[in-house]
Length: 338
Length: 288
Image (tube, rainbow over all chains, first blue to last red):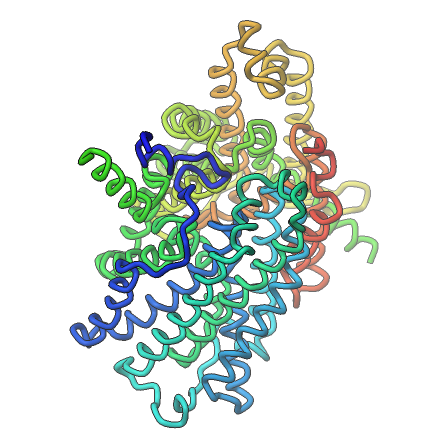
């Protein structure tokens, strides 16, 4: 192997130079296990930040769902909050009518989002990048407008407050966020393991093939539209799980769960962390939310300004995001030590 | 009833005209140069603030502020195109989307810091206020003025693109940049000037639109969808496409909000998804 690894990773996909070209095998690496110890450590060492921590986990899961379609299948979505909000509202509405058991309503949220995602997927797989952008944006805005106007069901701008029943009938959702944190961590970890298996499966490889060359994939017998619909539905369901988690742990659903800013911020997190890596979403969400928590405490306008600057800089100079940058650094060091 | 219907139609056309003025620049960058520029509304907002500032601080009359709004937006367009946009002409759509969302956030933050979050007032000259009676129908004078501006502008643009040397250079550069450069056209310069023209028109539209659309720091985000729609529905690369799309959107939006206020913005979003499904390349688009 005489080419520097940094060059091997620099292929020209639709998403840019950030995506590793090598097909990783599905074995768990030590670094990954260490990564999953971080939330556990945070749980015990930083008890004052458990509420923020559970929200980071939830948004990280949401970012993971977008990474599945953006990083793996190459679909740019500007309206992914539609599915997040659908999951959240499914939980909120079920609780309003007296059904607030967490595990079953979590499944309900996933199912509701999957149904909406499946319907939307038919619109999304048609057309070019721009049409997709507009259609996902349109679906998101439609749902937002629907939730806004149907205030007699959704509570409109005021949102829905409700109480979530005890988890498994034992642990209640306390104000310190202990149950919320552990519950979110378990759900996020389980979904992550499933998503990880998925991207290393033949389906995951097919998706990467579609991302790299849409025209060639039908020639080797891959049903492109059907595969894209499948992954879009799965991604919507995961977004629904994230939305349901947020609703359950905060015991509140607001209309902002469906809003465009949420979709845009989500896109930013995934790109900040690095696309096509699964971990990118989690890392991006963590960095983004911790920075937001700190900076917007200083001044919200200030935060928005730096967020914009950060985005421009990422696009111009750091296409791979945080993880891509680290990988290049490691590859560079491995190369120079040889 | 018929009077209502005609009144709504008229308001819708005026509203659509405004969308056209702002959106036509995006049609060039997005349609011809294939750059997804979500920050287009920021240029319109800039134009709007230039108008307001000149009117309130320097007492410049409204009509005189419009050319200055055009120039200010065009100048900032050139600067941004030369420094930032041109690096991303060949980048993926995702990069362009992120970059321009970043610009939107920065512009909103800067506008909030400088002018505060409130709506800005506009003082129209007397002859543009009130109603004018045309054939027994009371029409808003300002809306009539808007339509007039657009008619003149469309004709001018059509002539400029089809009949002048610069128009031919734009069309050549867009069709095939390499071949155009080979023929001695300075493609970089043509793109920069085209971008400036588009931004300038957005600034002009922003100034014209304060009375109809309002002006506050969230302007670029609030109307982003409308501008994108004009282009996506109208199809790229023509003047006729965005014009018709803008008029359709304007009429349906106003009619939707007037006749069925309960469902408000629903009409326009449903219309957008429907139209995009029927015409994925836009009403008059070239097939990709």
